Structures are given as C-alpha cells and as structure tokens.
Image 1 (spheres, protein in one colour):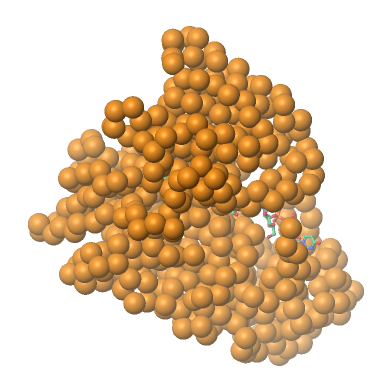
Image 2 (cartoon, rainbow, N blue to C red):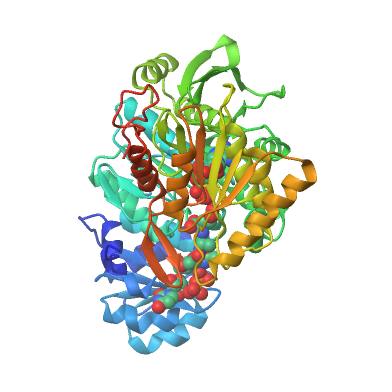
Length: 542
Ligand SMILES: CC(=O)N[C@H]1[C@@H](OP(=O)(O)OP(=O)(O)OC[C@H]2O[C@@H](n3ccc(=O)[nH]c3=O)[C@H](O)[C@@H]2O)O[C@H](CO)[C@@H](O)[C@@H]1O[C@H](C)C(=O)N[C@@H](C)C(=O)N[C@H](CCC(=O)O)C(=O)O
Ligand SMILES: Nc1ncnc2c1ncn2[C@@H]1O[C@H](COP(=O)(O)OP(=O)(O)OP(=O)(O)O)[C@@H](O)[C@H]1O
C-alpha cells in the first residue's frame, strides 16, 4: 500500500502558495458589519495566513478553529495547534476557557462553524475571486455528473478543477480526497490554489453532510444541479423531509445564482418550487412531466445512448453518452444543461458535444466500461436499489446474450441488505457469482452464505433460471466470470468501483476490480478497451 500523506502534507496541497496576512481585527469588523456578535481577546492587529479546523493539519501562521463537535470540543487541541505554529484561535466561550492559558490572541463567536466559511473567504481572498463553480447534490449521480461537466468544460477550452468523492484535481494536479466535500477552510484554500493555477471553472460534489456542517459556506455557485433523492443518510438527517431540507439549502439564491433541477420524481418538483435561485427544470424519464427541458428521442448506441434535449422556443441539443445505464442519460442531460445555464452559447455547446464526445467520459468505477465484447463493466452499486438499476440497464436485446454479476456485501455494515441483494442478483442476472466485498473484520463466509441464500430463495420462489456460484477470493470470481462468458455476454462487477484496497481482518489487500477484469479478459483472448479502436472507448479524463 503506498504511504498515505501526513495530514499536514495533505493540507499543504489545499493551500495557495502565496499567502496574505489577514488581521483578526479585519475579521471582527466583517462580523460586526454583517450583524454577528464577536470579540477579540489579545492583540487583534495580529494577522493569520491560513485557517485550519484540525490541530493535526495546522500549518505555521494559521488561525486554529476550535469548534465543538460530536465527540470533542476542538479547543482541547489548541495546545497541539499552537505547537504546530497556529498564531491565533477562533472559538466560542467554552473553548476560550480551555485555550486562554496559551496566551494566543482569540476571536470569540457563538458558533465557530457558522462563520468559518466566510472567515476563510476573507483570509484566502475567495470572497472576491474564485473559479466559476458548478455544484452537484442529490443521493446518486453526483460523481458521474461532475466528471461529465468537467469533460464538457474541457471541451470548451476551460482550465478545470474538480472536488469529489474519488479525487480532487486542480488543473493537472491530483490531490487525495478524504471527504466528498472537504471542510470550509480547505475548500477556500483550494479555490485560491486553483486560481493560482489558472483554473477558471470547477465542479464540486456538495454532500448533505457538507451543507449540514457549513462546509460550503462562503462559496457562491454559478450553477447548482439536483440529481435525485432516495433513501440514504437518515442516520444524520432523521427523515426524508429533513434530508430534503438540507439539500434544498444549496438552491437558495444566497448560495447559487442558477439551478438545474431534475423533476422526474416529487422530490425534484418540490426542490424546483422551493429554490430561490433562478431555476431550469429538466425531465429525463419516459413519463411526461412539465419541465423547461426534456430528454427526447433516446436511441441505444452501443452500450450507451443518443438523445435529444428539447427546450423552450424550439431550442434543441443532440448528444451521446457511451456510459451504460438509463440513469447516465439523466446525468448527461443534467451536465449539458448546467453548462448551458452558465451562459455558454447553445451553438458553441453543440459544437463541443459533436466534436469531442465529452459525455463518453471515464468516471472511475462508475459504470466504467472495461471491454465491449464481452461487455465488461465495473460499477459502485453496493445496495439493493443501485444493484437492480445497474443490472437492469446492462441487459442487451441480442439473442443468446447473458448477464453475469460478480458481487459481495460489505462486512460490519447493514446485514439485512445481504439476502435482498442476493435476490436482486437472481432476478436480473443469468449467472450470479457471489464473492467477497470488504469484509472488514467480519468472517466473509457467512456474508457470502447470506447472499447465496437470498439468491436461491428468490430462484425457488419464482422459478427463475439464474445459476448461482460462490467463488472467492474476488479476483478468482472475476476470472471465473470472464472464463464462462462469450462475446455477446455482459459482465457487471459491482460494489467496489474505484476502490483499490480490500480490507480483510484489518489488512488492506491491493485489489482493483478494473485491473483484475482487464487481466482476465486478456488471459481469455478478449481485448479490453484502450487496446482496440472500439467506438465506445471512453475519452481520457484520467
Ligand atoms: C458527521 C460528520 O460529518 N462529522 C465531521 C465533523 O465531526 P465533528 O464536528 O463531530 O468533530 P469531532 O470529531 O467531535 O471533533 C471536534 C473538532 O476537533 C478537531 N480535532 C479532533 C481531534 C484532534 O486530534 N484534533 C482536532 O483538531 C476536529 O477536527 C473537529 O473540528 O467534523 C470533522 C472534522 O472535519 C469530520 O472529520 C467529521 O467527519 C467524519 C469523519 C465523517 O465521516 N463524515 C462523513 C460522514 C461525511 O461527511 N461524509 C460526506 C459524504 C456522505 C455521502 O454522500 O456518502 C462527505 O462529504 O464526505
Ligand atoms: N442518476 C442516477 N440515478 C440513480 N443511480 C445512479 C445515478 N447515477 C449513478 N447511479 C448509480 O449510483 C452509483 C454511484 O454513482 P455516483 O458515484 O455518480 O453517485 P454519487 O451521488 O456521487 O454517490 P457516491 O457519493 O456514493 O459516490 C453508480 O455506481 C450507479 O450504480
């Protein structure tokens, strides 16, 4: 396993190289001007060059933010922060009691998290200059759509940045990603770094956690997009209504100038009605729904689709995505409209779509096409609903074509989904190969047994013809699927997507489904994409 960067080394990658000094008094003045209570203890003329919420990542010259959390009050780490070179502290009354012995100047506010976005904007200058931002929220499709937007922006000649689950990139510089949406000080530092690197447009996945935890405060999105809302993260949000309410924060005029909202279900219509940003609605399903824009004339094209986007005043755009799955038509349509909503001229956009095929982009581990004969696909689907959607979207019409699925279930996580995932696999696939996902510290054998039992019960109950195999380790299961498959078949390797380590009993084993699949394809005389001139070879977005 390659050595992980230390928190400080990782933090330094999220900072501009040229720092300016912002005095605590300037922050105090700003907070007072905007109607917030704040006081400075100590010398308010003292300036800081960075902002940091984690004592382990503090860099010299930083303002350390000691904020209360679920487990700790951050101020208890103020001494560590001071040792690392923090020159001032932002905290609340409770934190002041813990940190005052250090003698560093302090800026005191009622709720530190609620102001760190704006304070970071002052320190990094992002209140005035920031790349044009495209924000994505919704339960599924954020990563895929943000890669698609980046690809379209690149086709339009922009220098791009990206912030999300898989990676952060600033121009050509890749930066490891820890959270889907980093903390506010890191985001502002990163935007400032992007500006130094000449990045003029950036896409960002905006998780519900990031909205709830004020991580995107102080940022202004040129265009925000809503994909969909299905059940997830109710541990944090309590109910679907609350989950919706948090996501809706992104579409306030305070945060986003414009919004593109998919209105295929009632959550989308509700989001469009609720938003105060200027809204464009988009319908992507087969049901006729009133919307500003609609996806029409969907035609299969290899593993993906051609489609038309039809808008107001007879405006039409035609597009293609080589990514399999009906849901990728929705993702692609959303990406196009978000770029259009940013003010790009429709003709210029159409030319970019025609010339560069930007929606056939490789999104690591998301319906990632590894080969076309047989169709071999790696996807991140790791729950029953996603597995059903992914499997039902890869079945081809061709006579004699079979669907193989290779999958497992994560250990130490929701065990009730295991038999359901087994049943889903049996419903949608012809050959079900049960293997290991990330067992963590759980014994993998009972996990596999629960999946197999679910599949067999479904087969018995409905007289299905699916064949079930239990094969492990995972690499052997992938190899077995390829050895059994013919050119007309489809193999979906689901659950681990872009991940490159499998955790077994506390040990991280190197395992990349995409590499295993390529290796097995070659060993069986098939040609993975990248070594042929297949028309659905994804564009190089690496
Ligand atoms: C629920 C949640 O998001 N919690 C985040 C939150 O925790 P918290 O405020 O409760 O912090 P805490 O652990 O009590 O610590 C209090 C303070 O002490 C600081 N501290 C703590 C220890 C130390 O040695 N030094 C130090 O300075 C912490 O940085 C924090 O500021 O602030 C912490 C500091 O940044 C985050 O690490 C933590 O994310 C945890 C790790 C997490 O797992 N978050 C996930 C759920 C998340 O945010 N996921 C979404 C994507 C979800 C999805 O769509 O799948 C994401 O955007 O990544
Ligand atoms: N628009 C969509 N609707 C429903 N499911 C989707 C959609 N787009 C992708 N998926 C499925 O969800 C999985 C995750 O997709 P993606 O990573 O793009 O979403 P995400 O919102 O970023 O989720 P995560 O934060 O878990 O990565 C994909 O592997 C695919 O199976």
